[in-house]
Length: 160
Image 1 (cartoon, helix red, strand yellow):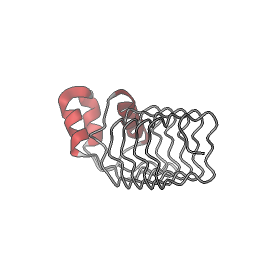
Image 2 (image 1 turned 180 degrees about the vertical axis):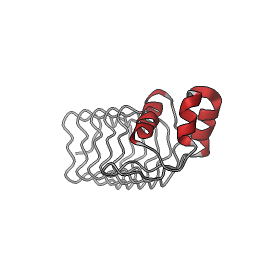
Image 3 (image 1 turned 60 degrees about the vertical axis):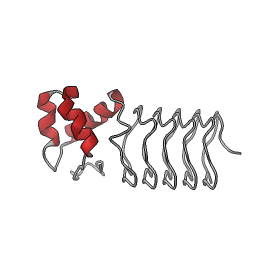
């Protein structure tokens, strides 16, 4: 999906898995109409964020997705396949990304403070200038990952 950039409306594409979640009545019927249109309002983005914070939607996220500048704070994305995705400048504060595939992902300037990246695959990921304060990278695979300029204060399992 694409998120708001500077308050402008942008198209939102939801995967079939997220559509399945909606059809499974995990969303109120009144909210379902918001997702049936191509353009969304700022409230709709808030509803999507709330959904991501309350529903484990690891199968709703697909590889190579552009989540640049998205606010995904405190979301449950464990075991997600985010390989080759763009998460530059994303807010992932407190997000649960444990066991996720972030192979070759771009997380430049991403805020991952307090995020759980334990056992995630960060092979060849770019985390330059990322904020990893108090993040958990226990058991994470970091081969070839770029942590240039990253803030790693209190990070558990971060490479030196």
